[in-house]
Amino acid sequence: MNGKVIICGAGPVGLVTALRLARAGVSVCVLEKRETINVASKASTFHPPTLDILDRLGLLEPVRGRTRVVRAAQYRTVAGPFARFPFEMLADLTEHPYRVHVEQAEIARAALDALERLPHVRLLFGADVLSVESADGAACVRYWHDGREQALEADFVLVANGAGSALREQMGIGFDGKVYPGEVLRVITRAPMADFIPGLDGVTYLFDGNRSISLLEMHDCWRVILRPSDAALDETRRDRAWVEAVLRDVLPAAIAAPPVDGWDLYRASRRIASRYAVGRAVLIGDAAHVTNTRGGMNMNCGMHDGCVIANAVLRALESGDVAPVLAAAERRHRVGSTLLAERTDRSVGDLSHWAERVRAIAADPREARAFLVETSMLDMIDREDIDAI
Ligand SMILES: Cc1cc2nc3c(=O)[nH]c(=O)nc-3n(C[C@H](O)[C@H](O)[C@H](O)COP(=O)(O)OP(=O)(O)OC[C@H]3O[C@@H](n4cnc5c(N)ncnc54)[C@H](O)[C@@H]3O)c2cc1C
Image (cartoon, rainbow, N blue to C red; front, side):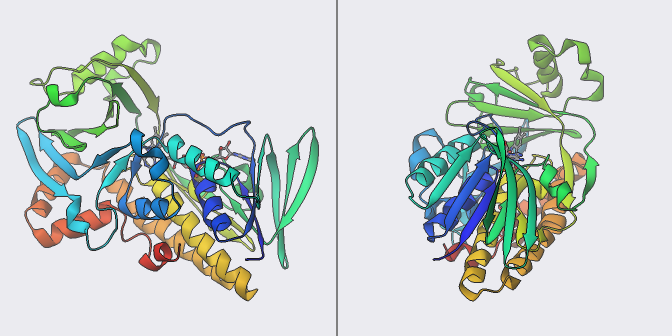
Protein backbone atom coordinates (compact mmCIF):
# COMPACT_ATOMS: atom_id res chain seq x y z
CA MET A 1 0.00 0.00 0.00
CA ASN A 2 1.43 3.39 -1.01
CA GLY A 3 1.10 6.06 1.62
CA LYS A 4 2.82 7.60 4.58
CA VAL A 5 1.55 8.24 8.11
CA ILE A 6 3.26 10.06 10.97
CA ILE A 7 2.37 9.05 14.52
CA CYS A 8 3.16 11.57 17.29
CA GLY A 9 3.82 9.69 20.54
CA ALA A 10 5.10 6.17 21.23
CA GLY A 11 2.66 5.33 24.02
CA PRO A 12 0.68 2.07 23.82
CA VAL A 13 -1.93 3.65 21.52
CA GLY A 14 0.56 5.21 19.11
CA LEU A 15 2.67 2.04 18.85
CA VAL A 16 -0.24 -0.39 18.35
CA THR A 17 -1.75 1.92 15.70
CA ALA A 18 1.63 2.26 13.99
CA LEU A 19 1.90 -1.53 13.84
CA ARG A 20 -1.61 -1.88 12.37
CA LEU A 21 -0.72 0.56 9.57
CA ALA A 22 2.77 -0.82 8.98
CA ARG A 23 1.44 -4.40 8.75
CA ALA A 24 -0.85 -3.16 5.95
CA GLY A 25 2.24 -1.88 4.10
CA VAL A 26 1.98 1.85 4.93
CA SER A 27 5.26 3.71 5.58
CA VAL A 28 5.06 4.84 9.17
CA CYS A 29 7.20 7.32 11.10
CA VAL A 30 6.77 7.42 14.90
CA LEU A 31 8.06 10.54 16.67
CA GLU A 32 8.50 10.24 20.45
CA LYS A 33 9.92 13.00 22.63
CA ARG A 34 11.27 10.65 25.31
CA GLU A 35 14.50 8.72 24.74
CA THR A 36 12.75 5.37 25.37
CA ILE A 37 9.16 4.20 25.83
CA ASN A 38 7.52 4.92 29.17
CA VAL A 39 7.60 1.78 31.36
CA ALA A 40 5.63 3.27 34.29
CA SER A 41 2.97 0.96 35.70
CA LYS A 42 -0.41 2.24 34.48
CA ALA A 43 -3.16 0.35 32.62
CA SER A 44 -3.41 -3.37 33.24
CA THR A 45 -6.88 -4.42 32.03
CA PHE A 46 -7.29 -5.54 28.42
CA HIS A 47 -10.90 -6.15 27.40
CA PRO A 48 -12.09 -8.76 24.85
CA PRO A 49 -12.29 -6.55 21.71
CA THR A 50 -8.85 -5.11 22.46
CA LEU A 51 -7.50 -8.65 22.84
CA ASP A 52 -9.02 -9.51 19.44
CA ILE A 53 -7.10 -6.56 17.94
CA LEU A 54 -3.82 -7.29 19.74
CA ASP A 55 -3.93 -10.99 18.88
CA ARG A 56 -4.39 -10.24 15.17
CA LEU A 57 -1.32 -8.01 15.39
CA GLY A 58 0.68 -10.79 17.08
CA LEU A 59 1.05 -8.85 20.34
CA LEU A 60 -0.37 -11.36 22.84
CA GLU A 61 2.02 -14.24 22.26
CA PRO A 62 5.21 -12.31 23.24
CA VAL A 63 3.72 -11.29 26.62
CA ARG A 64 1.98 -14.59 27.42
CA GLY A 65 4.24 -15.40 30.43
CA ARG A 66 3.49 -12.07 32.13
CA THR A 67 -0.29 -12.07 31.96
CA ARG A 68 -3.17 -13.17 34.17
CA VAL A 69 -6.25 -14.42 32.36
CA VAL A 70 -9.46 -13.41 34.16
CA ARG A 71 -12.53 -15.54 33.46
CA ALA A 72 -15.18 -13.77 35.56
CA ALA A 73 -15.91 -10.46 37.28
CA GLN A 74 -17.16 -10.75 40.83
CA TYR A 75 -19.13 -8.29 42.98
CA ARG A 76 -19.25 -9.15 46.65
CA THR A 77 -19.43 -8.11 50.26
CA VAL A 78 -17.23 -9.66 52.92
CA ALA A 79 -19.88 -12.40 53.34
CA GLY A 80 -19.46 -13.58 49.74
CA PRO A 81 -20.35 -12.81 46.10
CA PHE A 82 -23.76 -11.26 45.31
CA ALA A 83 -23.09 -11.17 41.56
CA ARG A 84 -20.70 -13.03 39.27
CA PHE A 85 -20.37 -12.49 35.52
CA PRO A 86 -18.47 -15.22 33.60
CA PHE A 87 -16.97 -13.73 30.41
CA GLU A 88 -17.71 -17.05 28.67
CA MET A 89 -21.20 -15.59 28.12
CA LEU A 90 -19.58 -13.49 25.38
CA ALA A 91 -18.08 -16.44 23.47
CA ASP A 92 -20.21 -15.78 20.37
CA LEU A 93 -19.10 -12.12 20.19
CA THR A 94 -15.34 -12.30 20.61
CA GLU A 95 -12.38 -14.61 20.05
CA HIS A 96 -11.26 -13.77 23.62
CA PRO A 97 -14.15 -14.22 26.09
CA TYR A 98 -12.03 -13.15 29.04
CA ARG A 99 -9.93 -10.23 30.29
CA VAL A 100 -6.17 -10.21 30.37
CA HIS A 101 -4.29 -8.34 33.07
CA VAL A 102 -0.83 -7.25 31.97
CA GLU A 103 1.15 -4.02 32.28
CA GLN A 104 0.51 -1.68 29.34
CA ALA A 105 4.29 -1.26 28.96
CA GLU A 106 4.60 -4.97 28.09
CA ILE A 107 2.24 -4.51 25.13
CA ALA A 108 3.99 -1.28 24.12
CA ARG A 109 7.36 -3.06 24.18
CA ALA A 110 6.02 -5.98 22.11
CA ALA A 111 4.64 -3.49 19.55
CA LEU A 112 7.96 -1.64 19.47
CA ASP A 113 9.87 -4.91 18.91
CA ALA A 114 7.55 -5.79 16.01
CA LEU A 115 7.88 -2.31 14.48
CA GLU A 116 11.68 -2.46 14.69
CA ARG A 117 11.65 -5.51 12.41
CA LEU A 118 9.72 -3.75 9.61
CA PRO A 119 11.85 -1.97 6.95
CA HIS A 120 9.28 0.71 6.11
CA VAL A 121 8.99 1.92 9.74
CA ARG A 122 11.05 4.78 11.14
CA LEU A 123 11.16 5.21 14.92
CA LEU A 124 12.60 8.50 16.13
CA PHE A 125 13.10 8.86 19.88
CA GLY A 126 14.09 12.23 21.38
CA ALA A 127 11.86 13.87 18.75
CA ASP A 128 9.56 16.49 20.30
CA VAL A 129 6.72 17.39 17.94
CA LEU A 130 6.15 21.15 18.03
CA SER A 131 3.24 21.59 15.63
CA VAL A 132 0.88 19.75 13.29
CA GLU A 133 -0.62 21.37 10.20
CA SER A 134 -3.10 19.91 7.76
CA ALA A 135 -3.16 21.26 4.21
CA ASP A 136 -4.75 20.14 0.97
CA GLY A 137 -3.57 16.61 0.20
CA ALA A 138 -0.98 16.37 3.02
CA ALA A 139 -0.23 16.95 6.69
CA CYS A 140 2.99 18.29 8.10
CA VAL A 141 4.70 18.19 11.48
CA ARG A 142 7.54 20.32 12.79
CA TYR A 143 9.65 18.64 15.45
CA TRP A 144 12.81 19.19 17.47
CA HIS A 145 15.44 16.47 17.06
CA ASP A 146 19.24 16.36 17.15
CA GLY A 147 19.40 19.97 18.36
CA ARG A 148 17.44 21.49 15.48
CA GLU A 149 13.93 22.02 14.21
CA GLN A 150 12.94 19.74 11.35
CA ALA A 151 9.82 19.15 9.23
CA LEU A 152 8.16 16.03 7.88
CA GLU A 153 5.20 15.57 5.57
CA ALA A 154 2.79 12.63 5.25
CA ASP A 155 -0.65 11.73 3.99
CA PHE A 156 -1.98 11.70 7.56
CA VAL A 157 -0.76 12.55 11.06
CA LEU A 158 -2.15 10.67 14.06
CA VAL A 159 -1.69 12.61 17.29
CA ALA A 160 -1.23 10.07 20.10
CA ASN A 161 0.78 12.15 22.52
CA GLY A 162 -1.27 11.71 25.67
CA ALA A 163 -3.62 13.68 27.89
CA GLY A 164 -1.36 16.72 28.30
CA SER A 165 -1.07 17.13 24.51
CA ALA A 166 0.00 20.66 23.62
CA LEU A 167 -0.53 19.67 19.97
CA ARG A 168 -4.26 19.32 20.58
CA GLU A 169 -4.35 22.93 21.77
CA GLN A 170 -2.16 24.06 18.88
CA MET A 171 -4.69 22.38 16.53
CA GLY A 172 -7.40 24.58 18.10
CA ILE A 173 -9.22 21.69 19.81
CA GLY A 174 -10.72 22.16 23.28
CA PHE A 175 -10.44 19.58 26.09
CA ASP A 176 -13.19 20.42 28.54
CA GLY A 177 -14.29 18.28 31.44
CA LYS A 178 -13.82 17.89 35.15
CA VAL A 179 -11.52 16.49 37.77
CA TYR A 180 -13.14 13.75 39.86
CA PRO A 181 -13.18 14.63 43.56
CA GLY A 182 -10.65 12.94 45.82
CA GLU A 183 -7.71 10.76 44.95
CA VAL A 184 -7.23 7.14 43.97
CA LEU A 185 -4.80 4.97 45.93
CA ARG A 186 -3.42 1.89 44.18
CA VAL A 187 -1.75 -0.55 46.57
CA ILE A 188 0.40 -3.43 45.33
CA THR A 189 0.60 -6.56 47.44
CA ARG A 190 2.54 -9.71 46.59
CA ALA A 191 0.56 -11.72 49.15
CA PRO A 192 -2.05 -14.13 47.70
CA MET A 193 -5.26 -12.19 48.32
CA ALA A 194 -7.25 -15.43 48.56
CA ASP A 195 -5.54 -15.92 51.96
CA PHE A 196 -7.29 -12.73 53.10
CA ILE A 197 -10.59 -13.00 51.17
CA PRO A 198 -11.38 -16.56 50.04
CA GLY A 199 -13.09 -17.19 46.70
CA LEU A 200 -11.91 -14.12 44.78
CA ASP A 201 -12.04 -13.82 41.00
CA GLY A 202 -9.21 -12.05 39.15
CA VAL A 203 -11.31 -8.90 39.08
CA THR A 204 -13.42 -8.43 42.18
CA TYR A 205 -15.33 -5.41 43.48
CA LEU A 206 -15.71 -5.60 47.25
CA PHE A 207 -18.59 -3.51 48.63
CA ASP A 208 -18.94 -2.39 52.21
CA GLY A 209 -21.87 0.00 52.66
CA ASN A 210 -21.30 2.94 50.33
CA ARG A 211 -17.63 2.07 49.82
CA SER A 212 -16.06 -0.22 47.30
CA ILE A 213 -12.57 -1.53 46.64
CA SER A 214 -11.35 -3.02 43.35
CA LEU A 215 -9.07 -6.06 43.52
CA LEU A 216 -7.13 -6.95 40.36
CA GLU A 217 -4.94 -10.01 40.05
CA MET A 218 -1.72 -9.58 38.06
CA HIS A 219 0.61 -12.46 37.19
CA ASP A 220 2.90 -11.69 40.15
CA CYS A 221 0.87 -9.52 42.54
CA TRP A 222 -2.54 -8.04 43.36
CA ARG A 223 -3.57 -4.43 42.91
CA VAL A 224 -5.98 -3.08 45.51
CA ILE A 225 -7.58 0.14 44.27
CA LEU A 226 -9.52 2.39 46.59
CA ARG A 227 -10.52 5.96 47.26
CA PRO A 228 -9.27 7.16 50.64
CA SER A 229 -11.96 9.04 52.54
CA ASP A 230 -11.25 12.77 52.89
CA ALA A 231 -10.54 12.27 56.59
CA ALA A 232 -7.72 9.88 55.71
CA LEU A 233 -6.04 12.44 53.45
CA ASP A 234 -3.11 13.96 55.24
CA GLU A 235 -0.72 15.65 52.83
CA THR A 236 2.18 15.49 55.25
CA ARG A 237 2.09 11.77 56.10
CA ARG A 238 1.78 9.88 52.86
CA ASP A 239 4.22 7.18 53.83
CA ARG A 240 3.87 3.40 54.18
CA ALA A 241 2.22 3.77 57.59
CA TRP A 242 -0.36 6.13 56.06
CA VAL A 243 -1.08 3.69 53.21
CA GLU A 244 -1.43 0.81 55.69
CA ALA A 245 -3.81 2.89 57.79
CA VAL A 246 -5.93 3.82 54.76
CA LEU A 247 -6.06 0.19 53.65
CA ARG A 248 -7.07 -0.90 57.15
CA ASP A 249 -9.67 1.87 57.25
CA VAL A 250 -11.40 0.89 53.99
CA LEU A 251 -11.31 -2.89 54.44
CA PRO A 252 -14.30 -4.40 56.26
CA ALA A 253 -13.38 -5.26 59.86
CA ALA A 254 -13.57 -9.01 59.21
CA ILE A 255 -10.66 -8.90 56.72
CA ALA A 256 -7.00 -8.72 57.76
CA ALA A 257 -5.03 -6.14 55.76
CA PRO A 258 -2.50 -7.65 53.33
CA PRO A 259 1.12 -6.43 53.38
CA VAL A 260 1.85 -3.30 51.32
CA ASP A 261 4.62 -3.87 48.74
CA GLY A 262 4.14 -0.64 46.82
CA TRP A 263 1.59 2.08 46.08
CA ASP A 264 0.81 5.12 44.04
CA LEU A 265 -1.68 7.90 44.41
CA TYR A 266 -3.31 9.74 41.51
CA ARG A 267 -6.20 11.99 40.57
CA ALA A 268 -8.59 11.10 37.78
CA SER A 269 -10.23 13.48 35.31
CA ARG A 270 -12.86 13.22 32.66
CA ARG A 271 -12.16 15.25 29.52
CA ILE A 272 -13.12 14.78 25.88
CA ALA A 273 -11.61 16.68 22.95
CA SER A 274 -14.18 18.97 21.30
CA ARG A 275 -13.45 17.16 18.01
CA TYR A 276 -10.94 14.54 16.95
CA ALA A 277 -9.92 15.60 13.43
CA VAL A 278 -8.63 18.73 11.76
CA GLY A 279 -8.29 17.80 8.10
CA ARG A 280 -5.63 15.12 7.85
CA ALA A 281 -4.57 15.29 11.51
CA VAL A 282 -6.50 13.06 13.94
CA LEU A 283 -6.33 12.68 17.72
CA ILE A 284 -6.33 9.15 19.19
CA GLY A 285 -5.95 7.77 22.73
CA ASP A 286 -5.47 9.99 25.77
CA ALA A 287 -4.90 13.00 23.50
CA ALA A 288 -8.60 12.62 22.62
CA HIS A 289 -10.15 11.46 25.91
CA VAL A 290 -9.40 10.71 29.56
CA THR A 291 -11.68 9.17 32.19
CA ASN A 292 -11.40 7.67 35.64
CA THR A 293 -9.53 4.37 35.76
CA ARG A 294 -12.35 2.26 37.25
CA GLY A 295 -13.46 -0.31 34.69
CA GLY A 296 -10.11 0.06 32.91
CA MET A 297 -11.48 1.56 29.69
CA ASN A 298 -9.45 4.58 28.63
CA MET A 299 -6.43 2.95 27.00
CA ASN A 300 -8.64 0.21 25.54
CA CYS A 301 -10.80 2.92 23.98
CA GLY A 302 -7.62 4.57 22.65
CA MET A 303 -6.54 1.33 20.99
CA HIS A 304 -10.01 1.06 19.42
CA ASP A 305 -9.63 4.67 18.16
CA GLY A 306 -6.32 3.70 16.59
CA CYS A 307 -7.75 0.59 14.94
CA VAL A 308 -10.81 2.37 13.51
CA ILE A 309 -8.86 5.43 12.31
CA ALA A 310 -6.13 3.22 10.78
CA ASN A 311 -8.77 1.26 8.82
CA ALA A 312 -10.22 4.54 7.57
CA VAL A 313 -6.74 5.83 6.63
CA LEU A 314 -6.21 2.67 4.55
CA ARG A 315 -9.49 3.30 2.74
CA ALA A 316 -8.57 6.96 2.21
CA LEU A 317 -5.14 6.07 0.83
CA GLU A 318 -6.77 3.69 -1.63
CA SER A 319 -9.46 6.11 -2.80
CA GLY A 320 -7.58 9.40 -2.47
CA ASP A 321 -10.55 10.78 -0.52
CA VAL A 322 -10.14 12.00 3.08
CA ALA A 323 -13.88 11.51 3.83
CA PRO A 324 -13.59 8.02 5.47
CA VAL A 325 -11.11 9.40 8.00
CA LEU A 326 -13.29 12.36 8.92
CA ALA A 327 -16.31 10.07 9.30
CA ALA A 328 -14.33 7.62 11.46
CA ALA A 329 -13.06 10.49 13.64
CA GLU A 330 -16.65 11.64 14.19
CA ARG A 331 -17.70 8.09 15.08
CA ARG A 332 -14.91 7.77 17.63
CA HIS A 333 -15.78 11.20 19.04
CA ARG A 334 -19.33 9.97 19.62
CA VAL A 335 -18.03 6.83 21.36
CA GLY A 336 -15.76 8.93 23.59
CA SER A 337 -18.27 11.60 24.52
CA THR A 338 -21.25 9.31 25.09
CA LEU A 339 -20.42 5.67 25.80
CA LEU A 340 -16.99 6.07 27.41
CA ALA A 341 -17.72 9.19 29.47
CA GLU A 342 -21.15 8.07 30.71
CA ARG A 343 -20.08 4.53 31.49
CA THR A 344 -17.05 5.50 33.51
CA ASP A 345 -19.01 8.22 35.36
CA ARG A 346 -21.67 5.87 36.64
CA SER A 347 -19.13 3.72 38.48
CA VAL A 348 -18.14 6.60 40.78
CA GLY A 349 -21.63 7.65 41.84
CA ASP A 350 -23.69 6.35 44.76
CA LEU A 351 -22.17 2.91 45.24
CA SER A 352 -24.78 1.40 47.59
CA HIS A 353 -27.37 2.01 44.88
CA TRP A 354 -24.94 0.63 42.27
CA ALA A 355 -24.45 -2.63 44.22
CA GLU A 356 -28.22 -3.14 44.33
CA ARG A 357 -28.47 -2.52 40.61
CA VAL A 358 -25.68 -5.02 39.83
CA ARG A 359 -27.35 -7.65 42.03
CA ALA A 360 -30.59 -7.26 40.04
CA ILE A 361 -28.75 -7.36 36.71
CA ALA A 362 -26.96 -10.60 37.61
CA ALA A 363 -30.28 -12.27 38.43
CA ASP A 364 -31.57 -11.76 34.87
CA PRO A 365 -29.55 -13.61 32.19
CA ARG A 366 -30.51 -11.16 29.41
CA GLU A 367 -29.56 -8.13 31.48
CA ALA A 368 -26.40 -9.89 32.67
CA ARG A 369 -25.25 -10.44 29.10
CA ALA A 370 -26.02 -6.82 28.14
CA PHE A 371 -24.08 -5.65 31.21
CA LEU A 372 -21.09 -7.80 30.24
CA VAL A 373 -21.20 -6.50 26.66
CA GLU A 374 -21.03 -2.93 28.02
CA THR A 375 -18.38 -3.49 30.68
CA SER A 376 -16.30 -5.44 28.13
CA MET A 377 -16.59 -2.53 25.63
CA LEU A 378 -17.96 -4.80 22.91
CA ASP A 379 -20.47 -2.13 21.89
CA MET A 380 -17.75 0.52 21.55
CA ILE A 381 -16.18 -0.79 18.34
CA ASP A 382 -17.81 -2.40 15.29
CA ARG A 383 -16.88 -6.01 14.60
CA GLU A 384 -15.97 -5.12 10.97
CA ASP A 385 -13.24 -2.82 12.25
CA ILE A 386 -11.62 -5.71 14.10
CA ASP A 387 -12.16 -8.21 11.29
CA ALA A 388 -10.50 -5.81 8.82
CA ILE A 389 -7.12 -6.42 10.49
C1 LIG B 1 -2.70 4.22 37.48
C2 LIG B 1 -3.37 4.12 36.14
C3 LIG B 1 -4.09 2.96 35.83
C4 LIG B 1 -4.74 2.85 34.60
N1 LIG B 1 -5.45 1.71 34.31
C5 LIG B 1 -6.06 1.57 33.11
C6 LIG B 1 -6.67 0.33 32.73
O1 LIG B 1 -6.67 -0.66 33.48
N2 LIG B 1 -7.25 0.25 31.50
C7 LIG B 1 -7.24 1.31 30.63
O2 LIG B 1 -7.80 1.17 29.52
N3 LIG B 1 -6.62 2.48 30.94
C8 LIG B 1 -6.02 2.63 32.15
N4 LIG B 1 -5.33 3.78 32.44
C9 LIG B 1 -5.18 4.81 31.40
C10 LIG B 1 -4.00 4.48 30.46
O3 LIG B 1 -2.80 4.37 31.18
C11 LIG B 1 -3.88 5.53 29.37
O4 LIG B 1 -5.15 5.60 28.75
C12 LIG B 1 -2.80 5.19 28.33
O5 LIG B 1 -1.50 5.37 28.80
C13 LIG B 1 -2.97 6.09 27.10
O6 LIG B 1 -2.04 5.75 26.13
P1 LIG B 1 -1.63 6.79 25.01
O7 LIG B 1 -0.68 6.06 24.11
O8 LIG B 1 -2.84 7.41 24.42
O9 LIG B 1 -0.91 7.99 25.78
P2 LIG B 1 0.40 7.96 26.69
O10 LIG B 1 0.56 6.65 27.33
O11 LIG B 1 0.31 9.17 27.55
O12 LIG B 1 1.59 8.14 25.65
C14 LIG B 1 1.82 9.38 24.98
C15 LIG B 1 3.25 9.40 24.47
O13 LIG B 1 3.44 10.61 23.71
C16 LIG B 1 4.69 11.19 24.06
N5 LIG B 1 4.64 12.63 23.77
C17 LIG B 1 4.02 13.60 24.48
N6 LIG B 1 4.17 14.80 23.88
C18 LIG B 1 4.91 14.58 22.76
C19 LIG B 1 5.40 15.43 21.72
N7 LIG B 1 5.16 16.74 21.69
N8 LIG B 1 6.14 14.86 20.72
C20 LIG B 1 6.41 13.52 20.71
N9 LIG B 1 5.96 12.69 21.68
C21 LIG B 1 5.22 13.20 22.68
C22 LIG B 1 4.84 10.86 25.53
O14 LIG B 1 6.20 10.94 25.92
C23 LIG B 1 4.28 9.44 25.59
O15 LIG B 1 5.28 8.48 25.34
C24 LIG B 1 -4.66 3.92 33.66
C25 LIG B 1 -3.93 5.08 33.97
C26 LIG B 1 -3.29 5.18 35.19
C27 LIG B 1 -2.50 6.43 35.51
